[in-house]
Every structure is written in C-alpha cells, then in structure tokens.
Image (cartoon, rainbow, N blue to C red; front, side):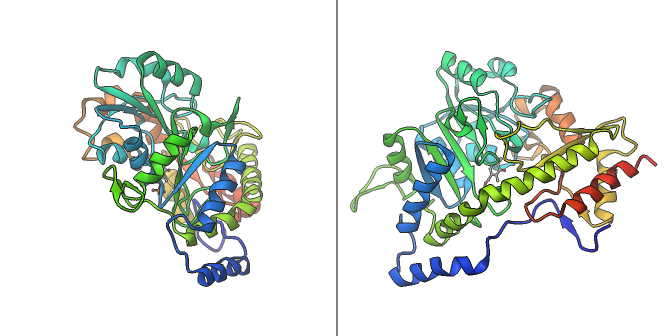
Length: 371
Ligand SMILES: *Cc1c(COP(=O)(O)O)cnc(C)c1O
C-alpha cells in the first residue's frame, strides 16, 4: 500500500511561523500561567466558537473530569458507560466514587438511557455519559431520568468539540461538560482540557478548585488540585482555533470517502454519522461483523502488516480492567452490547492531513479481503 506507516491519527499543527509571535509575546511579558492574557483570550474565543456560556481551561481532560465531580460534590455511586477511554471511570475512583456500569445502545454505542433506571440505588448521585466518537447522547432522555431522581449529569465530552444537536451546542446539556484538548483530539493544545458550565457561580468554584482551592491570597476553601492551563498551551489553542473549521472539513471528506467505499462491503458496518453540520468527524469507527470473512483481530493484523495502524477503541472495555472487573455491574452478562461491540470495533485512520487516495486504498484493502 502506501510506502509509509499510516496511524489512526496524526496531530494537526498550524504553520510553525505563525506560532512565533505568540512565543515572542510570552517572552516579552513574562506571564507564563495562572490565567494570563492568552488564557483569558482563549476562554473568550472558545465560548464564542462553541456557543457556550462559561468555560474553564485545564491542564488536561482527566484533571477536568476529576474537578467537575468535585465541583458538584458528587459522592456515592455514579452511573457511567464501560465503552469509553479509561479516564472516564478513573475520574470517579480519584473521587472515591463507585462506578456503576450500564450497557450501551447498539446504534450509537452511547449509554443506553432505557437501562439507566434499573441501575439507580439510594447511593446514586450522578450520571456520567460519554458522547462516544462525538455522537451526541440521547440528552433529553438522560435529562428526564436525572430530573426524576434528582441526579447530576456530567458529560465526558472529550470527543465532542464543536458537536451540535437539535438545540445548539451539545455541550450545553447536563450540569457540566468536560472537553479534552489532547494531541489526538479534533482541537488540541498538545495537552489540555476544559469544563463547560452555564452559571458564573459554578465557574468561580471550578476556577478555585483548579488552583488548589485558593480564594484570594490567604484563603483556601477546598482541597483543590493544580489543573491550570499554561500560557504556552493557551497560545497553541488560539492558533489552532483559526484552523479548526478547515481541519473538520478535511475530516468530513475522509468520512464521506470511507462511507461511500465501504457501504457495499458485506460484514462491515459503518457507525451512523451524527449528521451533516453537527458532527466533528473525530473518529471513523467500523464494526467487523461475523458475516465478514475475517475476525476483527485478523483484519486489524492484516492492516498493520501492510502499514495501516487502526485502533481497537474501545477494547478492552473499562469494566474489564483489574480495578473495575470485580464490581457487580462490570459482569459481561450486564453489558452484552458493550461486550459485543468491543469485539467488533475498529477505528480507521482519520486526520486532516490524510490523503483521500490513501483512504481509498484502505477501503479497497478491506473490500479485497473478500477475494
Ligand atoms: C481523551 C479522553 C479523555 C482524557 O483526556 P486527556 O486530556 O487525555 O486527559 C477522557 N475521556 C475520553 C472519552 C477521552 O477520549
């Protein structure tokens, strides 16, 4: 196939020369962190771009998840999905909270709202769903359950930068939404993250918690953490933001090419897209079904042998890792859809600089396994 290795993602970087004026400014004013000018500017520009009221920037998405739970004083048990990156559930353990895994919807691979109620106990205080691959959760159904049982909702929106739903930004749903700006995500600041909230008071509390719980010079109100984003990362974000629409439209073209080329390949199911204009095309997941001539792992290996490196996101399930597998909710019998999906899924390469000719070759290779 292609003469170089193709990975599932490659970080998107704007032209190098355009970053030097930002560096110059940091060197000139010597403000490196603690809510400096670039940090303030990035918060403003992200609110505008995303269509959200308040945002607090973080050093990474995981610390933002940990802080989001602390900000809402979540305790006891939290209902979440096993089909995600392990940081989702780890953020619960870091707060001494017991994760309760609930199975996913086979169409979207998001938390299945119809299974949430059965998992609620007197200890349940919140729900932590994930907009998996940037596909919006059934936010209305989840909100209804939360309202009925007086539960908080914190969305792990690490995949959902710029994703919209029927009523604007998907990030405006629930009590809080958490973003990741890790190098592999649609919008990156090398490392970074954020919490979205809808009121000033909550934003103030989050900002205190990410700065050790400090309020002013001599008062500490909570055992907060150091979650502050530096000026360097904020500057990267400002530059990156200028190119993010362009980056998403490149992703969209790749998504369309895969869909067109794979639609008639028997045994390969492309997950339904979130829909035109609202998706961010952050991942391209396929399910390798039993009617395909190879198993998922055989296809994975053959692709790797030819220099294509897809990823089995999300396999294994979070609930299969040693620190979770003893929980009653982690049993496979409780999670049949997640268990089956984790066995079938393969995320194909998708990133702005990926040549459409290579996308075409990858699709042809998958089709050719039928010969
Ligand atoms: C990337 C990711 C995170 C963690 O974000 P970091 O910024 O890498 O800490 C959390 N949840 C999900 C679903 C992710 O994909």
